[in-house]
Amino acid sequence: MEKFVIKGGQPLKGEVMVAGAKNAALKTVVASVLTDEEVVIENIPLISDLFLMVETAKRLGLSIEIDKKKRALFSKGGSLKTNKIPLEVGARIRTSSMFLSPLLSRFGEAVIPNPGGCRIGCRPIDRHIEGLAKMGAKIYYDPSDGYFHAKAARLHGVDFTFSKNTHTGTETLILAAVKAEGRTVLTNAAQEPEVDDLIKLLNSMGARIDRVEQRKIVIEGVKKLRGTKYKIMADRNEIVTLAIAALASKGEVTIHGGKREYLKAFLAKVREAGGGWEPKGEEITRFFYQKNFRPTEIITGPYPSFMTDWQAPWALLMTQTQGLSTIHETVFESRFLYVFELRKMGAKIDFFDPQVSHPQKFYNFNWVDKKQNCHQGIKIFGPTPLHNAILEVSDLRAGATLVLAGMIAKGESTLFGVEQIDRGYEKIEERLNKLGADIKRIKN
Ligand code: EPU
Image 1 (cartoon, rainbow, N blue to C red):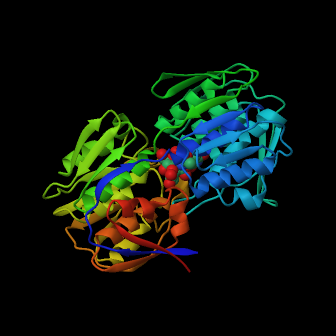
Image 2: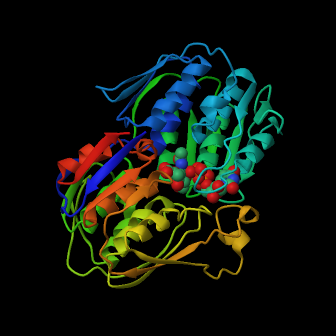
């Protein structure tokens, strides 16, 4: 167990390189299982979620290693020894459920633990299962052992329409369809850039995948995939975190890496709020504080909308604006746990329930899962100077937000649950310290 001790008050200044995208890197491990040839992935972030995915692939028998110096992942292919993901690995990382697709295609059979809920919501995989079943997989969940058991001699192509957006659900079905018999057409498919990054990787392995319309993807099944070398995209969520760190600390930071095209909804809100940003190169953007932040109204949504992953740091920024800001979270049903921590620091944030005429349709999560005590909206009354506090991290993005909160607060804050942050941000404290922050990692 480790904690951060953060001394607040320093504006961030300088230049920083963004890491490779967590939500692209994790899926490259799953894709590597689809071939018995060598796959090399470059620009990987050195984060614990990726280490767990690699450990899971090793348990399956894949010969796979991370070269930390080269920031590269080497999968040597070869045969696998099991089609079952053990509970002790699966329970530690939800994305391990995505191995279902390549295991089905290699063994015709797969056993994976129920990924279950986590602290941002129930997070079922019913949409993944429904699609795989349409492709011919017989899947049942055995409550007596907690595993999904899936069988399919060979998956076949299908026309499938997702009932609602699902990012990893779309990726799971793409991973299943690449080696299925015939053509698969996925309608209402997710548009997140990380999905397209996976498509590019798979196509470089010989897959035939085409996004024919914004939300329609066509996959022609192929018999075999080959090895490849592929460089993954930059992490959009990290760019947003670093940009907000610059703005909230009243500093200025130039971020190297990442396409602005993927950040349109964020950049528009920064302008609306009176924050500064300017292009400094094709993939270089400078973010800087300008006087007098203005309040904003945010509704999160699937890409290209304002991402759910950005709302927690944005809420922190809004605590520093003059007036009332609102955030309406529509993707996950429980992503406001950080609010209780920000309140400990003096933030004035109230929960509210936005009025929505057809919640079952409107929300991205399954409305039937909705817990009575979860709210979908917050009101932020600013500006409130923040002060130090003892804080607990609930999830990855909440954790990064609390680091930033500690950085702009008066006094010294202590943050427990740092391992949640290490899941998705590589050495966040070292990189922020290089920009002028004062964060110490302490082993308990
Ligand atoms: N959902 C269902 N059933 C399904 C699939 C999804 O009810 O079968 C619900 C989810 O519970 C959620 C909503 O639908 O309420 C959207 O879920 P989606 O499947 O789109 O999200 P995800 O694939 O589980 C990925 C990222 C998240 C990111 C979201 C939104 C990865 C590994 N995770 O999650 O990233 O917030 O898409 O873009 O790619 C993070 O990085 O911290 C993170 C949570």
